[in-house]
Length: 436
View 1 (cartoon, one colour):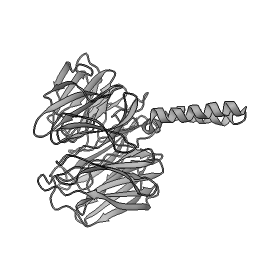
View 2: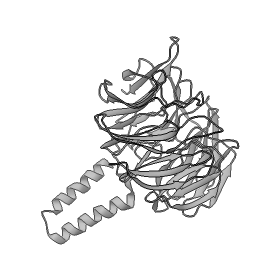
View 3: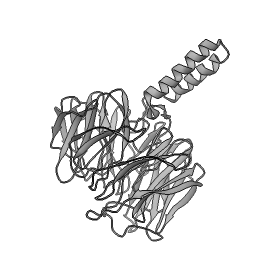
View 4: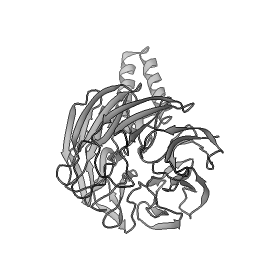
């Protein structure tokens, strides 16, 4: 898409030197193209601006051929220690790799940046000090939401002082603005916070879902000014909102509170909703051209397909992907559940194509790259298998450290993975650049 965008810009520039009517037609075509495809389609596929990648759907840019095998020594371009602890996934913007992290002893929450070529740490900015929640789930951290970017600003959200705190930084690590996006004060399930922020147009969207005052809200990326706010059902849930181009329009998708919901990302108005999944979900929804898919969670198990035009349920089953998001590719839906079982369903009917036990537990999400699906379990093992509906076809198994919760980024035939190791008796987090 970067090449397409650049070529469109070149056409506009050439048109400026021709007749005025041609200049008008070409410029109008570019504007309409940008509107029709939505902001997510204009992101550079040479980068990884969101934890779900350049397509926001768990798929890497087409044509990539990342390694399928690696170890602590093989196919490692560089590796660098990550201070603190966090489960946020790396994002890649230009020559920078950005993560969030938390120092639990110093009670600080930070954004940290590494050089994409060498792995050298470029800067670390403390966003919050103190205000840590007294209790979170043992598998959660105080830096689980991934950072996102519009290419100019970095946006990071943290649970701090019983609220969702949202900060915008420039690419050099300077805080541009910071504000309380809204309350986050769960009273029953004190598991902590997890949803990642999302850039849409000139706004950044955040969610907070708990028993009394949950919301979706959008803020102006340049200033932090609130643009819209929509109330969410009163129940704890942990899904990240996402925008997909479904049934010819941009839809803000989120599941949880026993609902699958679609909102207008420009103003927060509800488009449709239908009963589905479970009370609590963690995975981000995925979509095809006309169908959206969601899974959860707690207390019941369900995966569901919903028609994107009106919210009508197309199929449902009793499989559960609570922590993980899924991947849709070429008519089929691929998933890895909490217990480490990989599954494939036909997207439009729900027909199970295959099921294979790989090994869990699993909290990270699968990513499609180069025709293969990569997914790590919590013990640091990454499974690679073909995205094929004709049967499970294993490609490789790889081990890094002994703990993996973050989903890797895939850019330029390289993989940027965050893992940890406790074998020395002390937990050490590492950011790896995997490539040939």
